[in-house]
Image 1: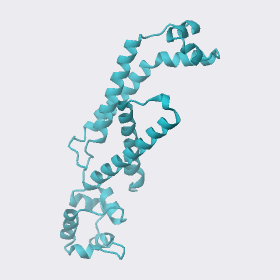
Image 2 (image 1 turned 60 degrees about the horizontal axis):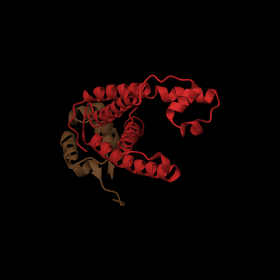
Image 3 (image 1 turned 45 degrees about the vertical axis):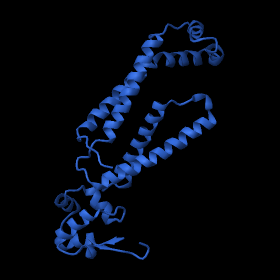
Image 4 (image 1 turned 90 degrees about the vertical axis):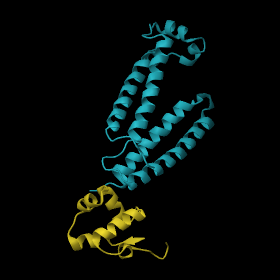
Length: 160
Length: 66
């Protein structure tokens, strides 16, 4: 599979993914704290959560850092940047691009698609309440693709 | 498909990296072809034949299962 992005965009892609991870951590800090405090106090989180998130915060005596809108903003930007980052990283040319890499890329993309379908199907089967959204499935596909491409490039076809 | 790239390389004493440089591909590509893990395109096969000054079928040989 031929690609047209220059090699240097790989670094931009890595930077985007790193920023996305940081934004995701910031956006989820309140959930992490709720989980941490809940576990520490041995709280039945699900029981309290069914009564609303505000009740949980009162119950845990916790003041959230961010409102729901702020959290969503961080998470949306995180998702957007991670997808852009993965796409830039994976579809940028190699230092010396040739037909071998084009073939590896196409092969890994197909394998990743298969793994994503299997994984998503498994999740729907085991935990139907999770309801993976389209963008998260796309992100999952790109993560699988990254792993398979990395494996092919640095392990399977590595030269000593 | 078998190939005799390693032998041809040895004849003119050129490394995988050197051959890759001459053909404008990566060293990984030459390594994968030599090990039979990757079958090159016709263009690359012809470039190799021209570089080694022989016919394509002298470098790439069909096996019974092909």
